[in-house]
Structure formats: structure tokens, C-alpha cells
Amino acid sequence: MFPSFFKFLITLLLFTSFFYNVNSLKCPKRHYRGKQEKFVVILKDNPSLNSRSLNSRRRDHFNKMSRCLNKTTIPTIPFHDDTNKLDNEKDVLQDFNVENVITGYVGYFDPNFVKDELKDWDDVDVVEKEKTFKVTSWKRKLSKRSSNGIVQQSTTLWNLDRIDQTTNKLDKKFKYPSSAGKGVNIYVIDTGINIAHKEFEGRAKFGASFCDKCSNIDDNGHGTHVAAIFSGKTFGVAKLSNVIAVKVLDKFGIGTSSSVIAGLIYVFNEHMKNKNKNTIINMSLAGSDDSLTINLIMQKLFAAGIHVVVAAGNNFHSNSCNFAPASSPHAITVGAIDESDKLTDFTNIGQCVNIFAPGKNIQIAWKSSNTSTKILDGTSQATPHVSGTIALMISKSGNKSPSQIKNDLINISTKNVLKDIPSKNTNTKILILDNNNDLNIASPNNLLKVPG
Image 1 (cartoon, rainbow, N blue to C red):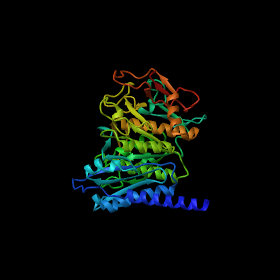
Image 2 (image 1 turned 180 degrees about the vertical axis):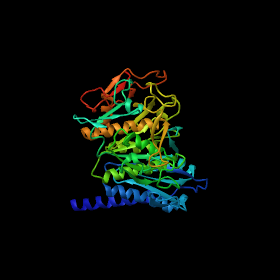
Image 3 (image 1 turned 120 degrees about the vertical axis):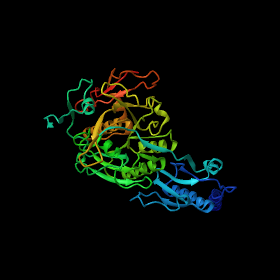
Image 4 (image 1 turned 90 degrees about the horizontal axis):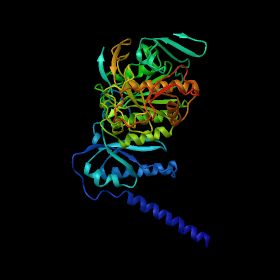
């Protein structure tokens, strides 16, 4: 009896599996011949499936795309120079994948097909039209070691001077742990970096480029400026941290959600294969609006132990929750203050902003030469002050989960400092970054906080 029952059960399972596969490969009922637009698609995650089953489902999806829509699937690869461009881009799906974590792709489709068919496929989680992203800066103008493990740097840079003390009575010094971010990898999702600049002392390297028609150099300058804030020997917060350039924005400081996603997936895979898990991502950029696909990937990065620090955006006191990646609860979102502890007129605000840092009149390294500098304003400049501080915390006290690091930043806060807070601001935990001496997490006095 039992052998017969098991034979029946196996036959039934095989039939069900066959029926599922045939049904899942059914093509759309009509032909869609409208103008194709670019979309980002993320497939559903199923934690109960093993890697073989997940890969099988992934293959089924791409087989369906091939058979029904004549779409060829290729892996997302970095652009090596400005000639590395697909000739038949509209017939290709660019697959991005972190094994057993996330699968998705970028491709061109008729919007009616997306609305009527694709978004309702059983294995599709999110479909989103490609969005524009850009830098969040405004262009303006062209040590001694102590015995207690603290380095003291004489400086006239107000931003560094401001973040190591609880008030804005500046003492022209910047104090930081002697570990100085050593052993921490900070990935700059940006316009690239002038890795030969003297500020980086050989600690900067090029990772990959994913923007359209882009070279591997920083032909904008924004990425170099941002990277030197958290890692520069003179201008930086974490002076021994490693810097990796991931280029997703072009020479005009503009990119797309697909290029940003490709950059994030690149860092994700690097983190997964590296033994060193001290990974920080700095995103001094903002989208034209919110993005479900970006925020879903942020959630996966957070779960993998990657610290992501993002700019609040420069929409003049708009709600940061309306813009990606600032809207993500799985990132640390940074707004900008000026020299007098006032919110800058350009910074975004709202419940999604976790912390404020110096973001006005910031003089840092520039792309023009290996010694050049430039002054910029923006939440782009505020963001790497926080990335650098996290690097200091990790190198001094060890790595923790992203939620623990975020909580530490809040718990070590000082209160009643921010001035002229707009009445429409809805955040009850507004912070000003303050590294106060050696970042002793046991003594809650490193940040400045307005009480909720």
C-alpha cells in the first residue's frame, strides 16, 4: 500500500511542477507595440526555498521573457570606458543578483505591458519606472599624537572643529581616536574619485563604473570632494579609512535608478565575498522622488550588516521622506547645518532625517589636480561627516549591526543646540553630529540633540 501511495504522490508532484512551469511560461494575451520605456524589476524573495529552487525560478522568469518578448538576459557589468555601451539595449535585460538575497533586472517595456501584465506576474515583487538621481551639492568657490590614544589636529576648518565638541565655541582643534577609521571600507556611490589626490595617501581605489557613457575618472569633482570629507588626511574625519569609488553619476552629476542599483549591488557582492565586513556606503545623492526599488535594496543591505549613510536632499526644507534614498528607514539620513548651528536654507527636513552635520562652506579636495581644493555647500557635504564618524566608531570599538550603530549615534547625544527649527519639521530626534574626544560610547555626550 505504502509504495503505491508514494508513487502516486511523486507522480502528482511531478505533474504539479510541470503544470506550474508550463503555466508560468504562458505569454501575454496581446502584443504590445507602444514606445518602450526603461523599468526596474525586482523578483519576489522566498526564504523557504533553497538556492537551487530560487535559481530555477529565476531561470523560468528569464526564459519566459526570452520566449515571449525576445528579451536576452545578460549580467550587469561595469562600463570600462565611454565606448562600452550595448548596441541593442532595448532587447536586453540587465540582470542584477546577490545570490540567495535579491534578484532583479533593468529592461525596456511598453508601459501598458507593465501595467496590464508584468506587475501581476506571480514572481514579480516590484516594477518601477527608471528615475533620475543627482548630486546634492551647491558649488561656491574655487598633529600631534597624545598619550591617551587621541590625535589632536590644529585646524581652521570649521566643520571638523565643530564635530568634536558639544557647542559651537570653536577651539581650532579636531580630536579623534588614533585608530582613525583604519580597516573600514567606505564605498562612495557618486561621480568617481580622483584616487591620486594627495589627501588619500594611496588609500583610495577605483571599484567600478555603472553610468552610461562614463569613464573611470571623476570628471565632475563631487565624488572626490565627498570622499575627502570622510577620509582625507587634512580635511577628513576618518583619516585612515579605505575609499572605494563606485561611479553611478556622470560628468554632470546625473544618473538613474538603474545605475545607482547596479552600484549598490556591486558593493553588496563585494561585501559578501570579502572577509572584512567593515563596510560603509556613502550616498551623497538624491532621486527626483521616492523609489520602492532603491528602498527594497536598502533593506537587504541593512540586513546584511552594511551601514548606509545618505543625504537628505537640497529641496529647501521639503519633506525628506518624499525622496530616495533619504526616505529609507534602513539608512542614516543626514541634513545640513551652518556655522551657527542653524539648519541651512537648502536642507530637507522631516521625520526621515536622523541627524544633521556641517554642510555649508566646506573646503575639501577637488578633481582639478592632486592638490586642488574647492568650497561646496550641500547635504552631500554633511553626509560624509557621519560616514566618517561611523568609521571612527568601528575602528575604535568594533563593528556592530546597522541598527546598533544608528542607536549609538542617537544615544550618545547632547540636547538643545539646533536653532531656528522650522515649525513644519516633524522629526522629534534632530541631532547635530559631535565626535567629542574619543567616541566613548559608554558616555552619552557625543551628539547634539533637540529633545522630543
